[in-house]
Image (cartoon, rainbow, N blue to C red; front, side, top):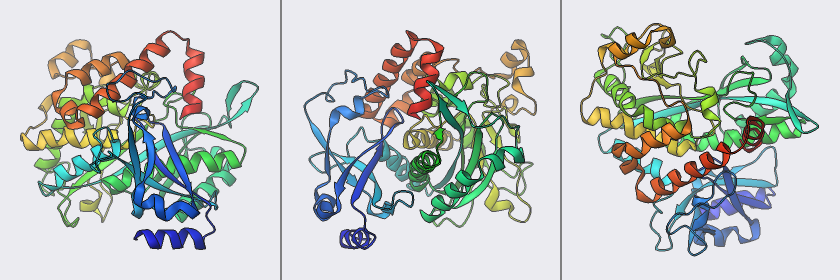
Length: 451
């Protein structure tokens, strides 16, 4: 669509406000809007945004980052292809926006721009990434000052699914109206915990979809009297909310799955194994991008089905990378890999861009995973001596360790670029400093509401 078509569509739909959305370094979805009467102009000029916003922590504490203080501005420039009238707020529409410098070039600290660069880097090698985010989230009510799960049902329980039937049905319909095709739904392990997945898409669209997904779930839940939280660990005594990333690599035309090899025991090609090796090589640093909050590390623990070790395995849900079994009659198309240590406190553009950068490093260097990194047991059942012999490492146990690993990882920091790496690390250090001085209740409460 061109700008005139967008204006016409918004006007005919009765839209009043159009939000230009972005996801910041703290994983918070933010945006600024224009009235429909000014839309045509704003599509040409963008909307101004202070550069300081990419140095703003997820507690709105401005961090000290050179060039990201009170002086200087960028523009939020919308991607016209993402125009969406919101079914749950029909007088509003959204577009996903890129951050563009005043000289009209992409700003180096733009997370969406980072993913675009990684997609282009893959495309230069004839590789086309498809991905899907698989989020878990918690439905709760507020009683006094506390959030309380909406039910006490068991994993996959029909009681859990039926308790929240009206809100789930509305979410499914609302996602579908925005072009997000729902794949599966069920009540998950934790009290009030839900899992609802949407169909895969090309990498950039997949990240855009996750932003729209989070917005939709929270808003529809609110209209039904619920709070929906994507916090990694909303309640200390309940299962954590992950956001696993499923991904595959195709040829440039999107016709042949380059992860597929019918001769392999797990139907995985050399490209697939090299991608695994690259991810495992950089995983300790990568989790600073995919599990980036203080709260993430309450979830990222052994025996929590979240994967706390650098290993992979076929249908092993305690391995960092799972090789899912194939669907009958759809073998080639269903070959994919699943990254387990990931959650929705992450910026989806940064998380997916970092995953691609790590995997591409394995492909470009023709790296192969170590034989002993393939495990068919829960790695937490291995002794420390066995883990050491197999070269399997424990993932960072806290955000401080993850930040340190990212700072030392030249492949990921160079892929992020100076502006994005500096601002991202500053925000993570700021959050670490803040929450290290507060108690568990403060952490759980603030992460629950923010995400």
